[in-house]
Amino acid sequence: MDVHKVAVLGGGSFGTVISNIIAENNFDVYFWMRSEEMTKQINEKRENTQYLPGYKLNKRVIATNDMETAVRDADIIFIAVPSHSFRAVVRLMRHFFPPETMLISATKGIEKGTFLLMSQIMQQEAPRSRVGVLSGPNLAKEIAKKVFTGTVIASEHASVRDTVKTILVSRYFRVYTNDDVFGIELGGSLKNIYAIVAGMAAALGMGFNTNSMLITRSLTEMARFGRELGADPMTFLGLAGVGDLIVTCSTPLSRNYRIGYALAQGKSLDEAAQEVGQVAEGVNTLKQVKEKAEELGVYMPLVTALYRVIFENQSIDNIILSLMEGEHALDVEFAAKDEKKLHHKE
Image (cartoon, rainbow, N blue to C red; front, side, top):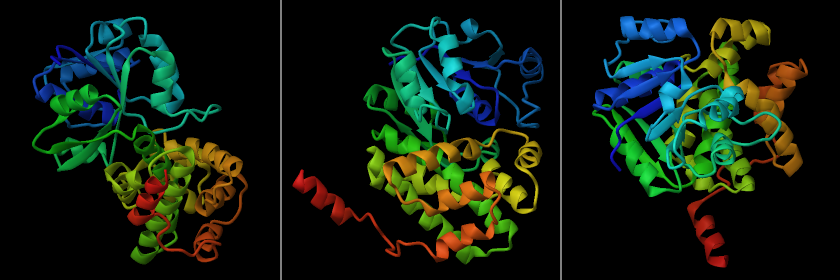
């Protein structure tokens, strides 16, 4: 497919770096955000000083706060807004682009009240569009420094996967493909919860042993929960699963990690959010996953412990206790040989 116009919606750090990569690949990018002041600043100074100061933007990035200008006649639209705004943004733009336009979610989260993922919202609001999901260990500040990075585009449509690879791939940004949209999207949403736990553990002085235990037990919970919802548990072994989990549970560049760190220092949730300065999707996701896990009867001790710490004022020590006293002691619950048996029976 020939791509003549690309739109990126959402003026945060990830939307900024995605816009610039695409522009550096010689595509015109219309970069939408709500703030007229920010659009003026980007167009004049070639810089998003609020989120990525010092990161110079290619001249083919055209900032606008007019939705119709951004998406009219776009061949492909990336949506990188917080999950709580996602449906409203899709509704706002859907009247301005042709039905065959590709819609790509770069948002990691679950809609409050419906437990719908962003791909499902796009399918509801723009049913004729071909949709995809972009996810992976993609810290925007590192991408801005052109640190070698990998991401995953998941879609049921080969044309979507191929198009995203064409416009995003660069010498420092590699794009892998997958067709398990649900698994890729769940991985990107669930890992935010565990990054908060990891931040708490770090603030409490826990070491690398504890962090590795947290990551592997978190991965088990993610795969357990994902399989119950219909995802392939093996998807969680890829970049958008364990890859993203390792990054967000290991560095203060992760907003969710910093939220957890601040909470463990005795700050309130509001104080922690104010300190981080951006939306931390893990807090929004936690309540929904806790409720859904209970509804489905899925054992998720880390999710339960974190919920009790944040929303029921229980001691942070309970999170570590949930690791040491959990009911399940099996190291690896999902093995390739078990999956083969399962498929053979089917």
